[in-house]
Image (cartoon, rainbow, N blue to C red; front, side, top):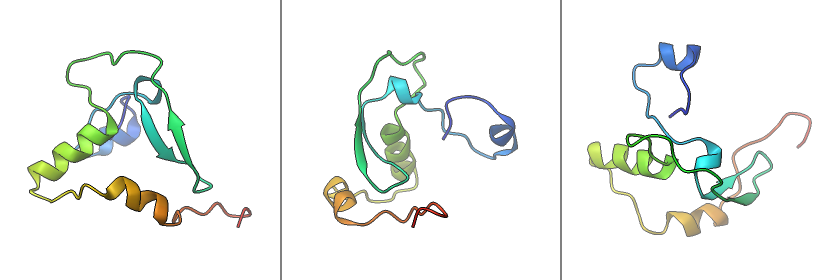
Length: 88
């Protein structure tokens, strides 16, 4: 998923267009494993642009993968797998 075209998206087989971080509202896990809230400050710029959550749910539906309803609760119960070298 990406907000803008880049060399990386040019090399990708599939790119899910998503809204930028300031066009979305919700929660994210930062590099320290902390859950933080993000507030939308601008409206999304296009009809085909989705939030990260909408894009991932759409992909799961297309692939016929079940998405559990308790994923948000499970997210806060698991430690983040993200580790920044030198900050362990």
